Amino acid sequence: MDMKVGTEHRDYTRRNYVCTEKGFVRCRKRARPDACELCGEHEDAAGKLDYHHWDDSNFHWGMWVCWKCHRACEVFERELDRFADKYRNLKKCIESTWDSDFEHRMKELQQIMLRKGKKIGDL
Image (tube, rainbow, N blue to C red; front, side):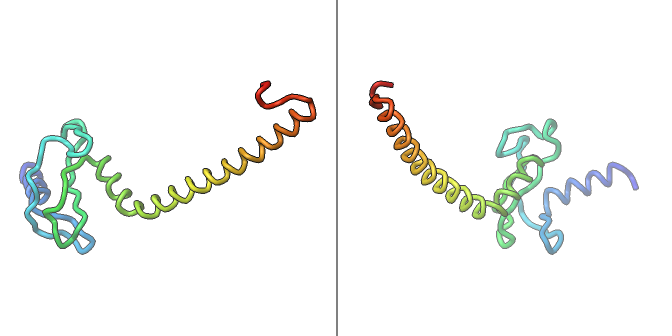
């Protein structure tokens, strides 16, 4: 097979098809820019640009991204809710623990200072 024919076919497929869980589907994609739409890395430096879509019923809702950003998009979409819940819960846990921890340590410090006959303001 002629290398030029293979490259042309690949480029045609990249411009006119989207890869889904069910295989390749012909669609009308947004115009392809010269750089990743998220990080701005130019195609020659970032490698090829991928068309990231998030709704299999609306392929035109997509963006041209480098492979690094495409991977980040996939992880972000798959893990976003779970990550956000963990993040909020951990924040609450740290805040509530720190507050009680801080108050407990202040009471200990006050008791130590009183035993030494000093006040907190004397520090």
